[in-house]
Image (cartoon, rainbow, N blue to C red):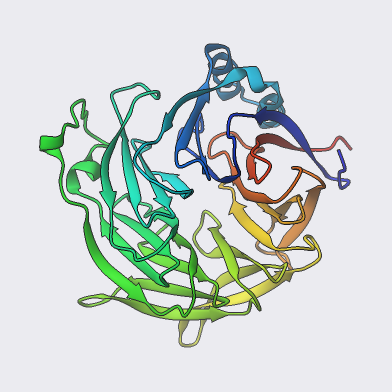
Amino acid sequence: DIILDRMSIVECVNLEGHAERVWHVCWSPCGKILASCGAEKGVRIWTLTEEGREIVNNIENEDDNEKRVTSVKQLERKHWVCACVLDEVQSRTIRSCEFSPNGEYLAAASFDSTTAIWTKQGNSVASWKCLTSLEGHENEVKSVSWSHDGRYLATSSRDKSVWVWGVPEKEINSQNTEYNDKDDDMEEEWDCITVLHGHTQDVKFVCWSPIENVLYSASYDDTIKIWAEEVDDWGCLGTLVGHTNTVWGISFHPSGNMFASCSQDYSIRIWENIKTEIGHTWQNVQVLKGTHDRTVFSVHWAKFGMIATCGADDRICTYTCQRLQSPPVTLFAKKENAHMTDVNCVRWNPVFEGMLVSASDDTAIKMWCVTKNAT
């Protein structure tokens, strides 16, 4: 592995199963279930084998944090299995998928202009049912995102719009109630609350703040827009300008006071919510250039503080953030040739620190262990 002095990015698992490019991966909130989607018109659900669960249980019971991080390397390909494929609902590429905050639902955005909502049946990760299909976009749906409280779902599209959907109360409450029966007669309408227009080109990505119901969208028009509910409707609170080409992704620091954006201009920008004389405003506090030499497709900020990026240069980079230092973000490790071709998505595991997953045009899904080097 090609390593910077302070950190290593080591491949632990190569999940093979997709026959075509993989666009997106996402973890369930428990960190033990992975969903992947791409050109095959379905979503694959991956879970741990019994032996894998035993390893994870040992990691969870480990008091030494450094040992917890390095123990992730014990998970190998044999410890993961594809539990099922969610298909036969959408007719084109599935561009994005995300678990709800309670892990009971999965939203899948497709190039057929629909977003399918899947619900887990009972306690089996191998049994899912399509609850509903959200329709309304006039073109490919590129991205989907749940609000932090599970009350809203946002979708964005090539039709230049962002839709905000209201999640039925029953689905919100299922986080705290035992719903063993999710039959059709219990279903409620997923209503479109608002359609947001403002971008002049395709909207590539949507992302909710982790602390409030404020929505951020990234577009081919090189801008990031901020949306929120005002007195009687939703509106645009502001537009962030800085990138000089398509903005591909956004990811928040867990505090909600900083976020990172990545772009076709080969850069990653760090934004911070700073208090001024007229109130709080988002300011671009750092521009990271040179870590990638082609389009940066994906950025993800872990709740443990680290950032990961990937792109068309087949490279994965990881960074650390110290908010009180200037500049706050520092490149810590770089993995050349992480995949055989474009790396489309990176996501940190929400529970196991240092565990990273990536998806690529080469059809592979890889899991990585990011650890500090011995000094």
